Image (cartoon, rainbow, N blue to C red; front, side, top):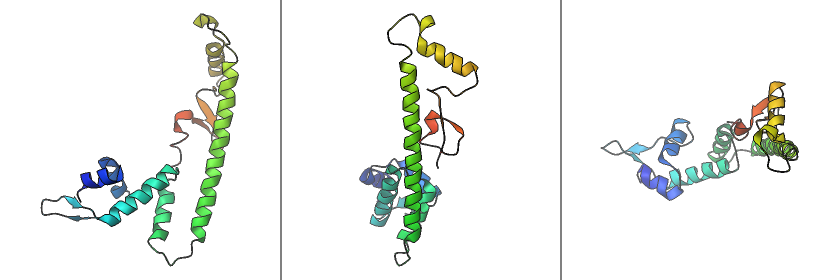
Length: 160
């Protein structure tokens, strides 16, 4: 099958497939005389495995390790267990970070119980005060697993 057919069969965007190929997660494919990549069922299964790992928020490096063991089925899977235990730790840390963020946001929300003019909005005033103090504002930062302040939007992306 061609890349478009693989994309459709696995629900994966073509550019994502190409990215996984560049990252070495998908093996090289044979090509037609017209230089089109030709994929087989093994590619579809591997891509589905990768997508499932990504849905579990695993990094590409973690997936590489898992694929290495998947490709060597007689190897001892102790390292796989350790990898998953470490990943569970990362998830637990993120949950704590997100709960802290939720508490901060609820604290901000409690500062403005009714709609009023923006000049007297408790939320806006507190965000401005925290921003001018150089502290981390509740809506914009959380502390990462290593104690660094991390942009909230990057909580999901900081572990690649």
